[in-house]
Image (cartoon, rainbow, N blue to C red; front, side, top):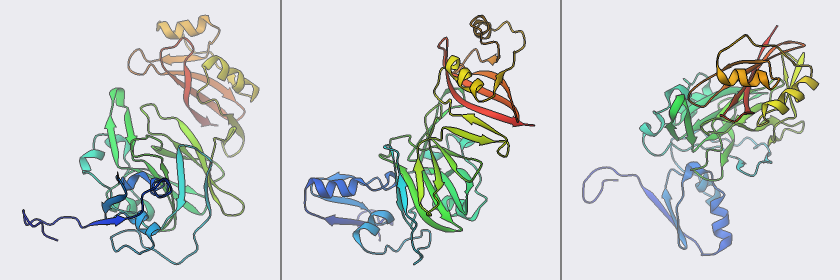
Length: 320
């Protein structure tokens, strides 16, 4: 409708008056961060496009969103305290400006699947699009901020689960400012690993389909199957490298001596008996790589930070 002063079109707004009290506040605070619903005393004021909130109020919103259907919703469950999950069928448009999502172009992918295209059509920045059994998992965000050394902080992150082109569930952080979700990687066996949106991303949980059909976001698995099941990599994320290398050795990943280097940090590792140090960055986030050989290929473990024994932030397997 036109603005009474400027004559320009403006977004319709819906004001819901409800009784004050902690119970009502608790219910509304449970909505996904992508809704950004401000609490104002005993009432809430939010754009009419807030599809998920509208669903909770018991009416069908008319907005350009993923089509709703009468198909039964799957059971969903999140075991993570910082990420919530719910069955949902409508996805509202991204808020704010497109510039909010343009500062980290290297973290945004071109949508290829019908599911990812539906998300992108609503204005969200798609960061991953991976299979999850018979479903499709798409991570997307509403806010990105570039940092140093090619890093990026991602907030307003979410994971949408699709059955074909039908949205069935959404995982989201407890607040819009929380970098709880940033990216996804597919795991062997059909599960999906969820990563946070911090400058140095860390895995926070695994999303999988249980035997009874439940979509469950749980803690990281103790080990990851790699190379078509021929080897397993134990969960060493966050461990200092001296501890991680012992855990890896117990799973059959043996250190491979790195080449000679004049880099001081790499030389320091060798003096500590960590001869598998391959390279270290002298600037930025101080990444270092360490090499291991296992039953199915070569494993490269990456640490970050300038501590004498830095923590593991990632790994990569090159299968034979």
